[in-house]
Amino acid sequence: MKEEEVNRCQIQEWYPKFKSTTIKTIIHELPESFIQYLLDDSGPFLLPLSISNSDALPNRIHNSEDQQDYIISQEQESDDESEQPPPPPSFPELESQINESIKTLGGAIFPKLNWTSPKDSAWISSTGTLKCTSFTEIALLLKSSDSLVHDLCHAYDLCNDCNAPRPDRFFLALRKWYPSLHPEMEFRCFVRNRILVGISQREVTGFYPILIEKKHELETGIKKFYIENVSMRFESESYTFDVYVRTDGEVKLLDFNPWCAFTLPLLFTWPELESESEPESVRGGMEFRIVESECGVRPGLKTAVPYDYLDTSEGSGWDQFLRNADHEFRRQTRSAGA
Image (tube, rainbow, N blue to C red):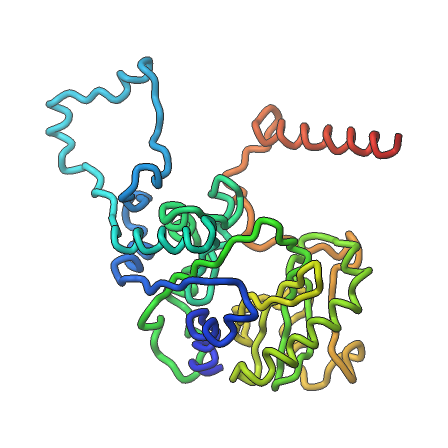
């Protein structure tokens, strides 16, 4: 794989050309100081100091009974001066620009860097999604994400013509948030030597019967979109691209990814996608793969709360939550059968 193939998949590179067929996006170049903030894990986890108090995440609240826990004598204070935590970082100019862009995009966005969104840190947000309404929320997702290390340090690891560990410049894309999107209508398309060889359901952690009903219709629409909007406009010969199919059948472009191991093959495997002798199931054409039963569901990858954060022992909060969820499911099942 070549460096130029990886670079073409950066959102700031492809978005201007495909603006009319994708989600409305505003892109900001990030200062190097912010990149270093994301990379720094030597000290405590600090969010940037917000220029707007209403923008900041709430501080810890304590009552008068807890007040004594926060009293420090002058003697103790002087002894601990050398151990005081560093002041929180601040990026007022960037914050102001980003908050203004969020307003322009309707008040809510989801963020991504040059290539990657912080999907693995969605669990830490108040909504459990990538929805952000402020710079502070964006910083929380970016700082908490492990997957973004790819963009920051390893973007060119598989390139045979590049020795640089990272690009010269980083960008933050603010993509308009649509609350009504259905995850089962997202698909990953695989293009090898300018031929669309495969389409996979992108959300492989669930079984959606509607995809079986609409499989032919979806395949036809995505193929048409590729021929009319992508095939002659994206310069690489082999790559992947993600799309979303709306309820009215219109196809929207979501993203491009390099043809390499960093990109998840989902319901395919890279060996079969790269094989010159295609399997019998795809000879003479392209294969469209979906999860066709509950047995075909795949486990999620870096999209949930880390296991170490969960306490599922009897009597714990999660134990009670799961019990309540099971009780509600049984209640609804009985009501439906009545």
